[in-house]
Image (tube, rainbow, N blue to C red):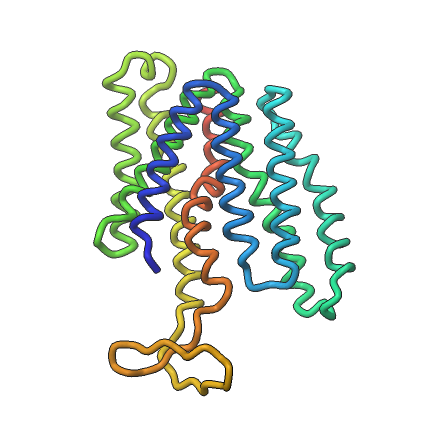
Length: 278
């Protein structure tokens, strides 16, 4: 699976979100809305489960609803995130009851919908952290960690090595930022900055590993394939072996690779940011 462009996109998006956070909560909310859109319409909608598009729509409504609620109130608590999950669970069950395809894979489809809703509201934690006291500092440091891991993810080395490099870059970058800039050093102690950036980078690395695991499971293996009349011809590998068509869910991996690091890092950024800074 091509990953260099997606990894660089993560680093670039982390920088954009950090600048947006420094400029104000409204710009950060707009950037987070883009993350939610990429995750739901790009990743969830292409999943290999029944009513995936409906699940993506419910998750999108949950994420944007919680985001708009948090931005309107300007509060730093997570009440909007928790409040939208109850109605979305009911909506997910209703969608399954209205399916007309025999409800094949009911458990998988419902689990996808509920999980997607939970993950779609997690990026709102970035905005809630930004609205806390001196919240722009932990947000920037956590995004530094995510961006460092995203940048290291493009290195031509093994997965474990590049993720270790990314986490180390996050720690070193946060420490250097605090020691070389007075305006950050006065607001955040060096140890706190390193902790926030490192753990945010670690969660981003876990997200990359999860997407790689999904991609490995859906990678087509060389095997003979019978071609039916009117069906598309299977692809061939370099040694002449034919491979099965890539599963429909494979198209979800690229959007997930871009959005999931921000989704996974949001809770730890919020908790550590409130503890060490807010």
